[in-house]
Length: 182
Image 1 (cartoon, rainbow, N blue to C red):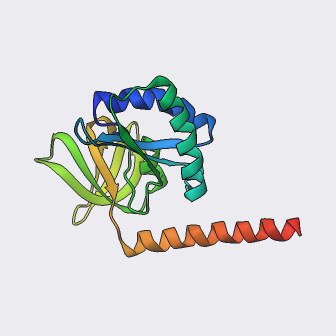
Image 2 (cartoon, helix red, strand yellow):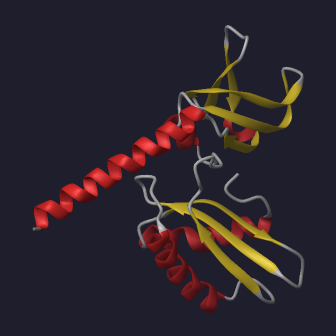
């Protein structure tokens, strides 16, 4: 899920160590567009789940150096480094645990219980499976992580409140740090 195509996966193999050395984790990578105007989109974050403009610039510089040297993409492309955003894609098993209690939308590569798309509240992970509480259902659905082709948090009031609280916590921590330096 972090990469969709064989080319994406090769780029992940090349760039994961670069991101890790710079202190980031690649959440998702996509090489989009045709032969003429291509765009390499990298969504990343720190291990703490943060990514600001300075982080994007730092990772972009680190990635650019390696991309220029290795030249893995034929032709011209635009590099775009960003945070995953508030209604982020869920691409790693740990994401489903981190965002437990929030609503998500999942798409599978095969039919399960008569459908390929699910929407429900994340209920953690269990033995490599994503636990999902569906509205109106009493049992928690277990979906094998390997069957998921797309997953994303659903933009909701609860998600927005959680994001605001995390930003406030970070700002408070920054204020505390600046007061200690004085």
